[in-house]
Length: 262
Image (cartoon, rainbow, N blue to C red; front, side, top):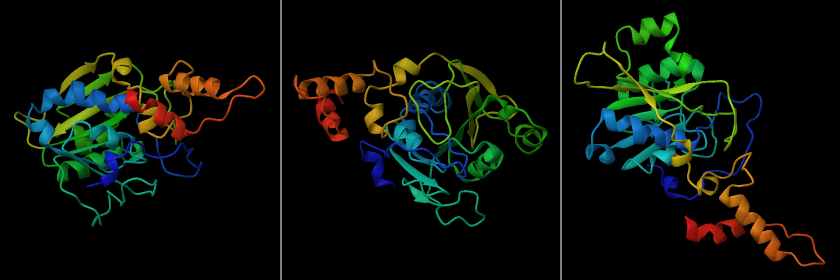
C-alpha cells in the first residue's frame, strides 16, 4: 500500500520531457466521475468501499490519490519513476510488483491500452476500468482480441470534454479529444455480449474541489477567479506597504491560509 496516498500533495508542478513516455495526467474530477456515476451501476454499496484499487500507470498520482477518497486502499505503480508509487512494468511477463487488487483502474498509454486491459482482466478480482479516448472502440485488432468476445460491461461517455495535456495537469485546458470510461467485471452476472452504454452528465464543476490545486501539487493554468489565486492575491496585498512591491508568497503561506477551507 502506498503510504503517500494520505499526503496532501502529490508532486511539484512539472513539465514532461519531450522524449518521455505517453503521460497525460488525469484531472481529479474525471476519476471522481467514475466513482460517482459509473461504479455504482456496476458494483453496489457497501462492498464497493471495502475494495482495494490499483493504478498501474499512476504517473504522479493524480488518479490514485482521487481513488483513495473512494476505496479502502489504493496501490500505485508506473514503469517510469515519476516520484510516486512503485516503479514497475505492469506488462512484464514476470512483474516484480503484483499487489492483490479488487479493481484495476487506470489511464493507460493509448498505444498500449489493449495490452493493459487484457493484463488487468487477468489480475483484477472484481473489475477493470480504463479511461480511454472514445476512438479506442475502433480498430480491427482491438475488436478481434478484446471487444468481439469480451466487450465492456459499461461504456460511459463524458458529455463534457476531459482536457488532458501531455506531461502536465491543467484546470481549464481545452482539447479536441473525447474520452470515456470502459468498465469490465471479471465475473459478470450476464453474458459479455451485452454492454451498456451511458453518458456521464455534466459534473466537472461539482466534482472539482477548491483544494485540488494544493492536493495535486499545482498546475499550469490556475484561473484568476480560483479560490487559491484569490487567497494568494489577498496575502500579497496584506504583505505590501505603500513603499514596497507586493511580497512573494510561498506555497507554505498559501497552505497555512487555506487550511481552514480544506
